[in-house]
Image (cartoon, rainbow, N blue to C red; front, side):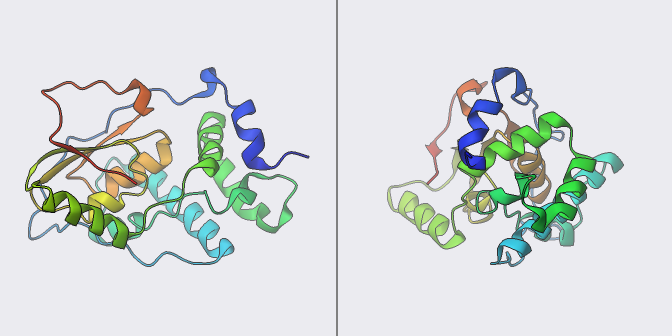
Amino acid sequence: EPTVAEAVDSELDESDAPPEVRATRDPVEPTAAEPVARPATRPSTSSGRIETGVRLSELVRRIHAEGRAASIDERRELAAWPGWGATPEIFDDLDQRHSVQRERLKAIWTDQEWASARRTVLNAHYTAPEYASAIWDALGAAGFTSGEVLEPGCGSGAFIATAPAGASITGVELDPTTAMATALAYPHARILTESFADTSIDHDGFDAVVGN
């Protein structure tokens, strides 16, 4: 039997890909009263990651339904979005260890959202904040101090969380749930929900590109 990761690409064709959706809110400037979120601690076990991912998926859906911004505490939680790269078993219906969490996800996601999230098991392995900080330091040493910055695959927002104050970031993320979680955690950033292959630049360009 093929693994989840091996089966994903064959099951998600172009017609299943999520539609292009821009960020639901314009970016806002962080203030002293609304600091940039620092992530809560991510769980290290598979079961902990799955439970956190399900709980945060439910939180994203609830905030979106209520049409509001995330609170500071919610932003810290959402900034610790674990993704599904380390836990492909959540999408395996034959694995009964996480059947309760699987049904909770199916209750809030459309078939399209399920397929999009399942596809992320191939690449949702996020950069540690320490590495993101080191990359920003290297960029600073090369002369960058402020300007427009593009992150082609922003994931949970590690580079947004560790960015210098002068960086105005546009992040691109294909998975809708991940993109919404990151946009809610970092409302000062512009998050595009689309494939980077489809991203068009609607201004004069960027001063820097970051990623890992």
